[in-house]
Image 1 (cartoon, rainbow, N blue to C red):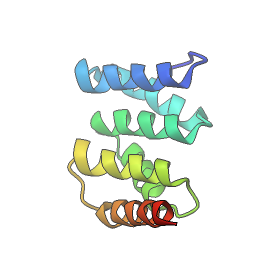
Image 2: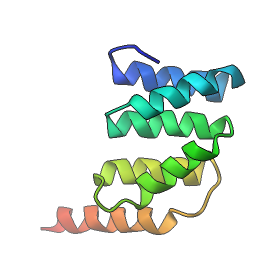
Image 3: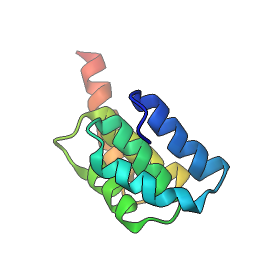
Image 4: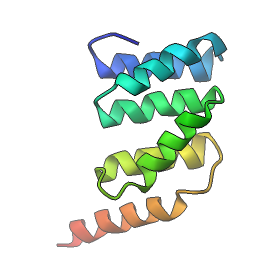
Length: 108
């Protein structure tokens, strides 16, 4: 979780959580989540940790989804994780809102 490339950090977390179901990787993923500065990578780390059963990671995803100050892509990615990967429904409204904003921008 300390690789300099954020895509590698996020990809490693996904591999450990979704493919290997490596429960022992949860503490290092959570530590990486706390230290991560890239919002995009934070979503990846939180998604992986939530898949491994972390309630704080699930709460972090919910916050990123609902935070209107976050970039639309971050909010949409967090919503997609909550809805699609984890079966949560809390962020459907946010996903619709982000898609509508994107559609309005495209029409201008």
